[in-house]
Length: 515
Ligand code: HXC
Figure 1 (cartoon, helix red, strand yellow):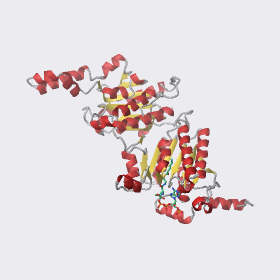
Figure 2 (cartoon, helix red, strand yellow):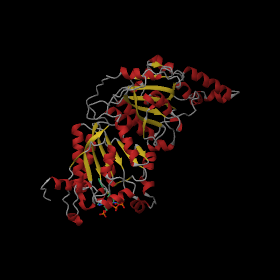
Figure 3 (tube, rainbow, N blue to C red):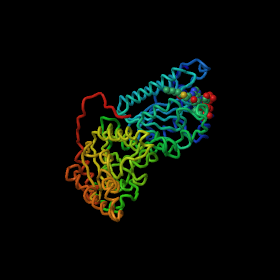
Figure 4 (spheres, rainbow, N blue to C red):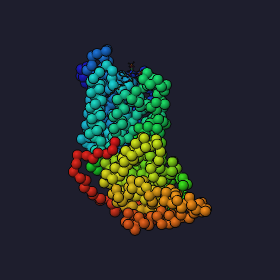
């Protein structure tokens, strides 16, 4: 089309902005979904979107494609601001060729990824696509490969966020999987390697879209999704909240906000919030909320591996990554899922200069055939590896108990913990008193006139002698034993003390984390 004056350019833009046209837009709305441009406008600060590649077109000619050559090729790309900071983004437009990925579509995404990487700003992808464009064959596959490669090259340099607001099927899932955080809308978002029909053909299993790859499945069972929300608006709100904690790239630090919460605020209530009985459950998120600025905690993967709670908060206005055993679920035990969840979160924080605040209350690693056969040795090692490898400030507090391998793994001094604290009543031991007494005094207990009374006495002795924080403190494995009331103040002081921490890492290509 020849562009003769400004009006025709405006007309062309108008046509491009209509995507697949009024009917397809109406169909999109009927499914409870917004269009790509509506989503972009809802996500960005008002009036900040600047679009590029509006007039991209594919050059395919097979299977009737020569007569379907929409401007934009099913994806909208550009830059804008969130909370006043620049982001780069792409949003697939399902109303245009089902948002399918062909050569031009893929190159457009690759271009915006390159710009995000070169300019050190977060990349956000809004996914709503039928997958590889069937009519473009290997060019469509090549386009995906180019995107995956860029995802990997950008990993650890800029935050990469994937928002799934429609289908994301086949190999397409691997771009979100590589990015740092995956968001899914309930009911409209689905992710799977193969859909229900293929599953039925191959395994004879009957399953629908939602039970195979809906937000519920990926938020709670598979752990693929880090955030889920009931509708698109809430998902986009979560994205804005998450970005408020993150730096734009790995060469800068997260934004510092003016905190109205006194960094030295006394926290005596923590004493009553944690039950004295080591077996009694409580919600560790309440403890986190009482310690951090303004009680604001953005939990990541809240529905998955709930025995470990991880997420972002601020201390004295600065972002911290919180990792806390959650006694409300399975007593806060460490299992395969909790280990991989914690390990990945720690590595994200380490890549982006976010100090780690670890709250420990765990009976140890979960025993069991399932766990052993599932590879708890390999997966538990990921958490250990991540803590040990991290060079950001690492501050920890033992709330109640730290037994066995879990004591070592959870940010201990031995793995390079910078400041390690414990509350006075906490217990650190190779194992819990009951297990220890049963192991060491099996013979004595069998021979005792009153085994129960004997056991109670031995448990009490063990507790006094071993299950206390003062042995660890006497060795310097703990830097101090602190009171509940001074907890927020002491943690803030520790984080301030470590603010300029520098740690050289050895010269190597990369380590070999047990994947
Ligand atoms: C070309 C596609 C397409 C695709 C959808 N469309 N997917 N065109 N290639 N992969 C087109 C449809 O033909 C239709 O065009 C329009 O998009 C809307 O699709 P509908 O089917 O009408 O929408 P809906 O009923 O909502 O169903 C959505 C859907 C379904 C579930 C996503 O379209 C679907 O199953 N698509 C195929 C999914 C798939 O198998 N993709 C390949 C995965 S393998 P018209 O003109 O009629 O409106 C893969 C490999 C990647 O991606 C490997 C990377 C390494």
